[in-house]
Amino acid sequence: AQDGAQRRKMRSRLLDLHATQGNVDSVKALLEETLQEGRSADELAHVIPLARVWGLPPIGEEVVARLAAAPDEPDVLARAYEVVSPALTKDQARAVLAAWAERYPTDKRLRALYQFLLDELDPVKAAEAAETRYRADPENLELLQAWVARSTWIDDPEQQLRAREELRRMRPGDVKNRRMLAQLYEQLERYDAAVVERRFVAQSGEGTAADVRGWAAALIGADRARIASEVLARLIASGDATPKDRLLAADLHLGYERYPAARAEYLSLLEEYPGNAHLYLRMAQSHIWAGEPTRGHIWLDARPPHPGGVRSAERIRGDAQAAMLRGERSWSNEQRAAARTCFCAVVRELMLLEERNVED
Image 1 (cartoon, one colour):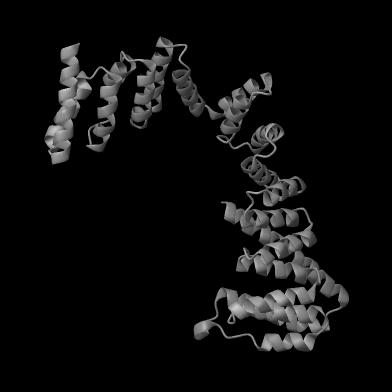
Image 2 (image 1 turned 120 degrees about the horizontal axis):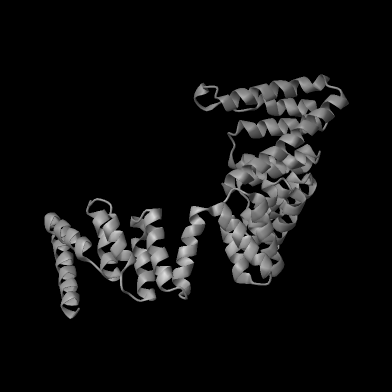
């Protein structure tokens, strides 16, 4: 046994030496020799990843069998598995862990590695089993966290929601979980519930500008856009708002007939982006909808030309909007009200879409 240990140590040193010197053929020969003769998990864990790096064929079943039979203690086996697992197929990994778990049935780490692998192979069954284990002991945080983790492996937002609602019950101050709950509620179009979670996160000590933006988006989804505009106004006052946040806030003011507030924000943006034709359109819209068509047409006439004189798709859409706005002088009050309603709906959809894109 001592001679074998010495030989393994010498082979390991030679391997490192040849690798350092770039002796490819010598390295491959030593790797193949070790794979054929290696018995300990430590030794095999050292060479199996190297075999992949140096272009040797995938390890065969004979090597897997020797790894499964390696006469090492559980902690050595567990460390070895973490190293070699990327080089194993799922079936090979299952064979190795099954053998080790059978040999050491009371070792928690080996059992956990084996169970985790089995769960990966059947994630739906794993999530259901994790929920069953938790339901049998509903105050066990470790079991609950295992269920939360397994629920993310499958495309079942309802199960993820159940697990995270339980985690909220047990740990109501967990901001990360509350943020994930908000996303799940929004995915399921339960915006009133999402608002509660978004507000909690935004007002917590860990809330960011993105969380405030998410709160506003949830409010819009829940048809509470007036409150959303107030939330965005606070974000703007904090100095953390992006130009897109400010534009959305202005559009909300416009949609809900708060024309002076909308103009103030559009003008602020124009100071930073003087060539933005879209902002001229919005200024025109604010005057026309407020019953000041002459002022509105001044803004339409002042729209800057597109750079280079080429009409992009965005410019074509802008020209169409401008033509529509010019025609609003002859619209009835009912037609203008219908246009505002449509505009509000578009702004709500835009903000929700922007929030989802940020999260993706």
